[in-house]
Length: 208
Image 1 (cartoon, rainbow, N blue to C red):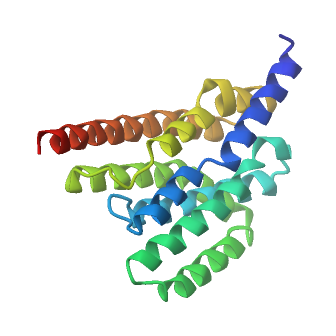
Image 2 (image 1 turned 135 degrees about the horizontal axis):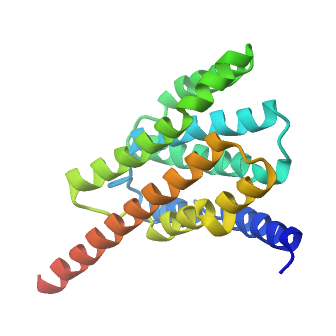
């Protein structure tokens, strides 16, 4: 397969998966009417990382196909955030979070050093979001409301066949590349943890 064709296929497949990536998690919360097992802190950190990342890409005029999925993911995360706040009885806090995120986004591009610093911390922020979700799973030992499908798709979009490859071919940005490799490994860790607890929960129900 020609490199340009492979690059286009990787971009299209990543965009397509990201268009529905959070849907399984959203539908699972709506059906259960509970956010049990889903970490609010993890979601807030992930949303922060997404906003920093897409702002960095746009600031340096990177090709849109390399980050086009992120506005879609941000919109889906906002829906998830509203659902979690609603089911936790804290929907009023959404106004506070909206003000913080919008204000932070505007601040990122005030000076070049700010966006560069934010991007250098982006991988740490996103990694911390995964550990927050892992911690939530370890504490509750319950993955009932956590979608393994969403985490599986998240793992794919960061792995070599998608964003690691497209970043290497198009921009070669080391910061971005390190972020995708790190996120691939951490997403896979969360996925395996979710599957473990779901399997364990299934066995417990059968025994009961």
